[in-house]
Image (cartoon, rainbow, N blue to C red; front, side, top):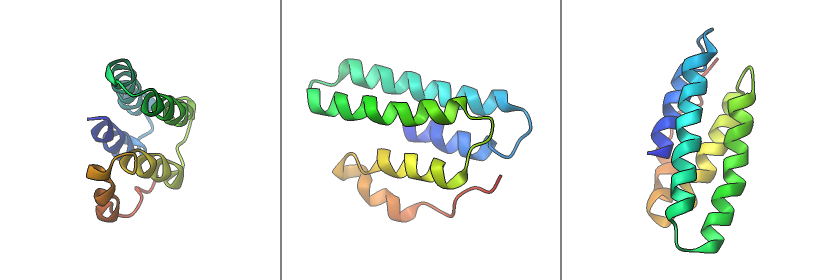
Length: 96
């Protein structure tokens, strides 16, 4: 679900209205917070909180670099074995 919101934010990054993109990043941040609260492993929680800082920087940015966005999404997908295989299926970065 977190990756869904990041994809949604990428699709909205070309728009002049920043609010929909920021809302998508805000939902990703909230979902990350909920995951951190629910995860039993301390090491995973710590890595998620570090990753959350990257999303927060995207949330605050006036414009989002497509490569920076791709890096954040790739980092998230590589956190688990089950989702790491999806990195190869990412299309080209969205152009702003």
